[in-house]
Image 1 (cartoon, rainbow over the protein chains, first blue to last red):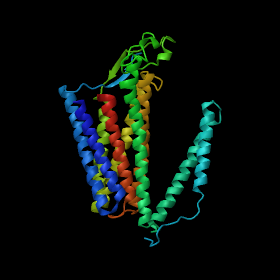
Image 2: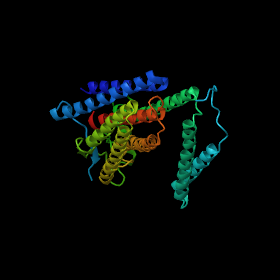
Image 3: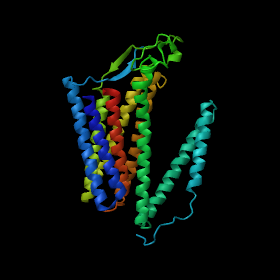
Image 4: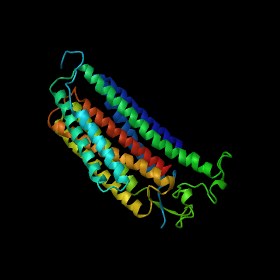
Length: 71
Length: 292
């Protein structure tokens, strides 16, 4: 399950990378590529977040939480 | 646009003002570290000079851009400059995520005697490799510090999840703003930009609240390798969100001034990418610090 989450995050980074290439090229084609890549990255990010919450609720993943020392 | 091969800017005083600002900042910072009374005011003065320089210099660039002085060659330079900046940002956060990975997966187990014979449990008497490690081995035994394994868990479903939802929503509103810009819907563009900025500010407010709780409960920058990596990663991310909110506000001002059109809006694209990147970094933090 952890590998699936990490793979999804890598895919999101690949779309960010694709957007940078669009930004670098410029013009109409570059601008279109950038917009589409950023749109895909936000769709995937929201889906991954929803999956995390669902997986946590169903017990597929046990969240770490944040650790605080006891006084 | 100019037909010249390259726009050569006039002589300018902004670089020397920037140098004076940085020098003032570091002189103030070094002296406040030595508890010199005038350290803080000089540091603040340095910040103010740098802010003045950035406002003035970038303002000059905007003025030159809207007056049509820049040709396609200059546009290409801006795009390459932004790309190298993006590369440096990716490497910056890769180093901090790398530090978290190294500490958690490699160095702390090694100190507990795992995998090799170089680091053994005898190096720190009574040391057991645990995560989170919220005490520094060298401090153990002093002032009642122990190899603390007693910690309480703060719910991932609380502020961290709310903050992730907020930042992801800001990514959605920014995407709608981007679409509105490309479609020429100016009022929708401004409304979505305002929503994005507001969500960023709310995120920062919650982050400060979370820091207050954590610090009050005893999790500090000095709380072992966990405290150090937690505050470095989330702190630098918060700093980037702050910069992002400032940049989005400048872009909103420029939209209101009518600086962008359907074909020419590189500044918007650069800032939009930066915000999406900051969003993804937080998603990575949420996953690696709070979940996996």
